[in-house]
Length: 500
Ligand SMILES: Nc1ncnc2c1ncn2[C@@H]1O[C@H](COP(=O)(O)OP(=O)(O)OP(=O)(O)O)[C@@H](O)[C@H]1O
Image (cartoon, rainbow, N blue to C red; front, top):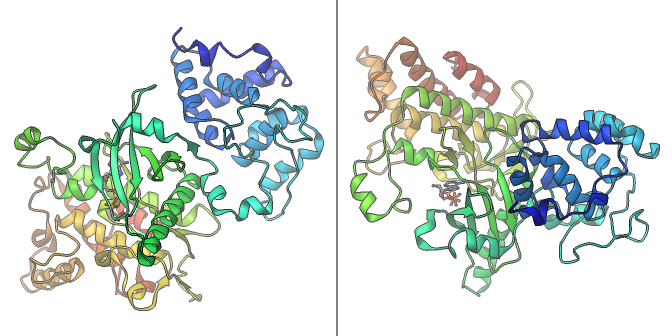
């Protein structure tokens, strides 16, 4: 067996021998289902990308990947109590209950803590290798492996430590190998803060996108300020993505901070950005010159069904950010370039470099809004209250998302110098008045000319909903904008929100 060094090379005693066989089997059965083990692996200190790859290969031989993962983890000195705390951290209460009889009862209060997060409790379980650890076996000293138990005040205050918690480290060398040495032919995109490369993790053949944060060569005070801002944004992105996992949020797989430039590794999105797909644009980076000739007419326009699914999926991603945690997360840079499409055209919201904890914009009572000094966003997508007063609430994302919907409906850009009415909202409003004067349906003025003709009444209704929800979302008075929950509801039902 090719991977015998990682699979069978571990002595049997490194299994979690302190767990009853039946308990271990039950835990493995649950975590093997739907590859749930992959969601806890990033929270296991000491577990690296290559370990996860090894477990995946183990699974391909019809073996339990969870059992393998736990064996590797135990070989690094972690024990049942650490496992219990890992389940607490990843909120797998069912698994905690399964093994609770096998850990000291002083840790059982972790279950109460999950059910009642307001109560603060931090049992001190020493990490392996520390003097008081029950197993003092020292392992792989070159690994930065902060045990999950080490969330003391000093570590929680360390932004770097907090940012990388829950995401796998990968070596710069592995990324060099994956991207053919960051070859120009692997470039798939460029953003304000770095270049994105397509890469292949050799062990699994899995495709990834590697964002390599630009290293500036400007050593002036301004240059180092820009550099700092870049690093800060990549850490913000890392921190946010490590905290939230959702079908419509671009998953981050790994990071590398030890090389010459910091790198973030994401799931590869085969269909590129929504912006490119709306414009039927073949990215210069994506293809060779020969292919560019073949594709010069551009990519196939999105169908109306695809547009509907993309709109709803992206809205769900934003709604998740706004509602998942106690404090809503404001993305701050929602735009078609940041909605990426996987091979099934499933949309995933990416680029969290500007995301911030914010607050829900209340419909009835006007709370004092947060003032953000950092969010920049892209001007055409930025809500007026942010531009004028730096007011930051969830309605900031609603405004930007409204613009996205208008782009999906009309195929127009958010801002264009070649239009008489440059801003997209003004362009739509202008056409709305024109349509009313000519007693014509607005959709006939605004429909994306590249899109296939509307096939049935449902598609016609959807296009109308798209335009009206888009306009409502981009309403200048933020208090009159719908919430993301209302938007998802309207789009799913093809209904039009009532606005003044
Ligand atoms: N995971 C991914 N899979 C495939 N392509 C990607 C992925 N991430 C980014 N890209 C491509 O790389 C481009 C640049 O992405 P990036 O997030 O760096 O910048 P941006 O959002 O376009 O710009 P900025 O960060 O300045 O707002 C994207 O527009 C997209 O085409």
